[in-house]
Image (cartoon, rainbow, N blue to C red; front, side, top):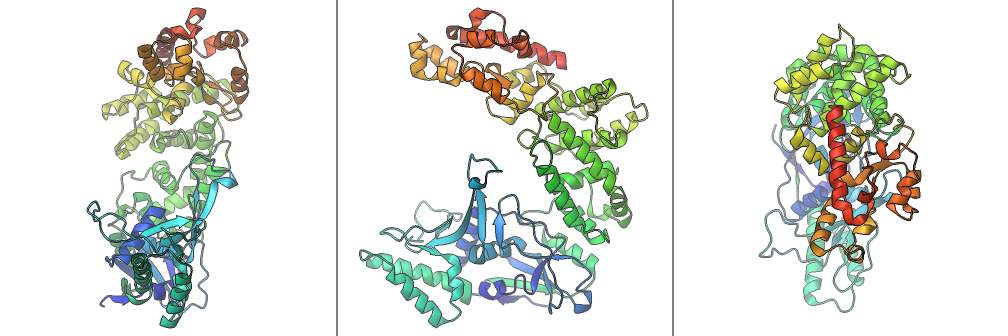
Length: 583
């Protein structure tokens, strides 16, 4: 059958009415700038690619779960809702084109809620809901500096549009959908024209009308949507078509494919909803906030059920999927135990820079423990210490960076072989095997120098600092990176006042935020530090073991600001020695 074409307006009328998404589709992932680029392409009459639809016969309508298109999207927190398809004639599922159709839906009928920069995720004031607007006074003509990738039309997501002025006129793009006839369009055009200021020039008026005409034509007249409809009712055939159709653009990940198969064949359990609910639980209901996704869950499923970590579609047979389904309860329990454990190390969404480094820990716990390791017995505390050190060093060494499927397979084999001995977490055996596979598994002198150059606020910096401590209450107490010599001392004016010369000021500034001038403090300790008269006085007010616990040199002369470079050198030596002992 040949391709058919439709206008965007006609297609949007069918979303969540006749057109829905199959469970095998990934969730919506586009960012606002991608939506803007799509609308810019439409206005410039560029092709936006073809679409692939699948029409379901009425007798097959209830065989598979289908989902609604997202209309109001919230950054990092919106799931597609399960659709009720009862009584729907001509039920059609979108196999290819979900991201583009959802983007059109959001831009014309919905909203996009984003988090403001630098504000906390759990603060309601951090979020702003925006609609798509078009500046009708922006000239879309190509300039000499433009490239094919440049955005020509003035699209922007905004909470509310500012009042029209001499240089801009923001029109809410979705209002064009009210123009179901030429007469209604001309009425809208007249209403908007009346809002222009008296100082609007003839050139601006021409651009204004031209932009509005382009938008109306793109949405209501031009057949921008070219689609092919598949009518075959064989799910396996359609799944193959789906996989091939989605090999371009943002490619399906391995976990997307596995989730597709699991969702289709788990039977009584809605795997998609189950897995997304589990991800939400891991991210929001533990002692620290985490940032796991379905990719992590599905990779863990493969690892924990001893299925191929590097896999192909043909490996997702019914037997393997049934094996995952039968072990799902144990898989969830093992992942929860492991997440709870690393949260007690202070590792969370800000500092877990590689989930692949974490997966071997889950596998070990999956084989050995059905409950927590945190009951305080000496053996389990030794286990906790070993796991913590191994994971921190694996993260700092980037052991599982890049393509790590083979490294995960090697780690699994070692852990499984060592499981018969069940003595302790096999850190040494793991490192030996990973080193054989060409992976960095430890910190040598050069790596330690890189660690010492880590700077304030970075995830790796927190990990490196936490390696120095034997703290056990990470879960119940928040520790923040803080400067030993306060930041305020390193302002040029303050350094000049302290008698520090220009060249030395530059060196002081370079060292101010490096690891050797940082330590981990509770919020209470930080407040006490701020109120101290001097660094020496503050340290003397601490308990007898404070300086040793934080690896601060005992020579009080080094606490004078003019000796800051010598202080850094001395503390670097203490930190280097501590890391070497940990290794």
